[in-house]
Structures are given as C-alpha cells and as structure tokens.
Amino acid sequence: MARRPAGDVEAEIDRLFELSPERFVAERDATAKRLRSGGDVEAAARVTKLRRPTVAAWALDQLARRRPDDVRELTALGDDLRRAQRRALSGVGADELRELGARRRRLVEGLTQAAEEVLGDAGRASSPSIHQAIASTLEAAAVSADDAAALQLGRLERDLSPQSGFDAVDGFSVVEPLRRGTRAQPKPARPSASDRRRLEAARSRVREASQQADIRRDAEQHAAESLRADDERADAAATEVAELERALREARAELDDARQRSRASRRELDAARRATTRAMQEMDTARAALDGIERDD
Image 1 (cartoon, helix red, strand yellow):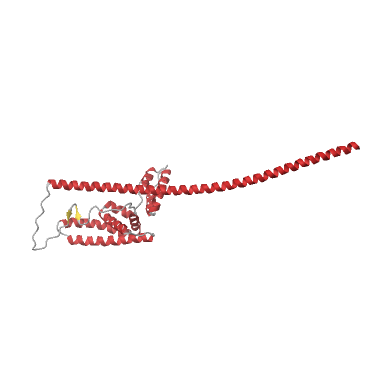
Image 2 (cartoon, rainbow, N blue to C red):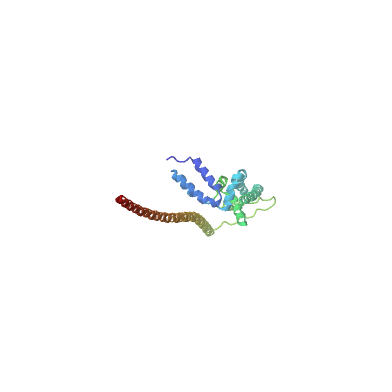
C-alpha cells in the first residue's frame, strides 16, 4: 500500500499541536491508528512518540502561529547575542552585549504577556508558575537552536530551562573593558588539578541529576497521559454500558408486551375453541333431530 505524502503527515502533526492539551492524547492515538491502518507504519510510530504539550508549551505553540515574526526575532537575537559574547570576551563590545541583552529581556517579556493572552482567549487562567515556565522556555529557545526550531514550528511539548545564561559562555564571564588610567588586575591563579577534578565531578553530578530529573518528568507526564487515556476509555465504557442497559430495558419492556399479547391471544384461542365445541355439539343435536324426523316420515 502506498505511503502518505510527507506533507500530509506534517499537516497531521501540526493539527495535533493546535488542539487543546486535553484532546491531544486521544487525537494522537486515533491519528496513529489511522496511519497504521493506511499502511504508513513509520508515520504512525512518529505520531505515537509525540507527547501532550504542557500548558505553557501549548500557549507558546499557538503564539508561534499567531506571531511568527516576533518568535523569529527572538531566536535570531540569540545568534547575535552569542556573537556579541565572543567579542566581549576579548574585552571589547560589552556595551553592544548589554544592549542586546536588554532587547532580549524586552522581547521575552512581551512574548510572555502575549502567550498569557493566548491562554486567556482559550478560557485558561495563567499563574505565577505558568508565567515563569513561559518566560524560561522563551529564554531557552533563544539559547538552543533545537529549541528555537521547535518553537518556530509550534511543536513544543514541554517547558524548557536555559542551559546557560546570556552572561556567560563556556564558563567565562563577560570582561568589562579597562578604562584609561586604570591598572589591569592580576589574573586569578589557575585551578589546581585536584580543583579541576572536583569541578568536573560536580559538573558530572549536575548532569546526572538533570538527566534523572528529565527521566522523572517524562515518567510523570507519561503516567499522567496514561491515566487520562484510561479515564477516557472508562468514560467510553460507562457510556457503552449505559446504552446497553437502556437497550436491555427496552427489550424487557417489549418482552413484557409480547407476553401480555400472548396471554390475550391464548385466552381468545381458548374462547374460540370452546365456541367451536359448542357449535359442534349443537350441530350433532341438530343432525340427530333431523335423522328422527326423516325416520318418522
């Protein structure tokens, strides 16, 4: 069987991310089932792996559709900031970096407010935690190219946290340029081998903790999605049971009516049989009388 064109699958995925989070899982499973039935197993597997967006991610997905130019401006600004950081590390361009940082903050604040307006239009209330999740996700999208691509496509699934701030690159902080007449400060001593080992061990523990946290978040989200799917199946089963019970009540009522009609028909049959018996008796009596008359003649 022919596979569906790639454009059709992309359109299906876009449609899923436009749905409310409550409808996502059921529609995702139905779409995967339809693709699988159509013979496109690969596309079905891809759809099945999609996760229900968080409220903050959903709001940003819809914002990316409403204001794509603003979202692109934020992600492009991330590239400018990274270039400015590298220049600032050499002791020049700190003013440019501060100006770009201020511009980024204004963009994040404006887009955060716009995303909360999306929630309001959908009848959803924001909260301090959702506000923070939206802002952090926007900042992360300005840092990571992969997160930026997901945001621009409107296919974010989870809240994001910036891996590093705009005030540091590869562990180095921005150096302010020396003013004329000031003396350069001595460079800090280079860390010892043992300090570097402890630092690397600490970084390793942080990475492991972050990975474990991601695993726990994924497990919690999967459990929540499974619970929601189970609730939906339970509701569907309850509806089906209610329909069966209604059909059973109607069948019982029809059975009672049929039994009543059967009893009435049986009574009518018994009456007809008795009437037939009386008629036969009367006929026999009449025949006997007729035979007597004929003999007398």
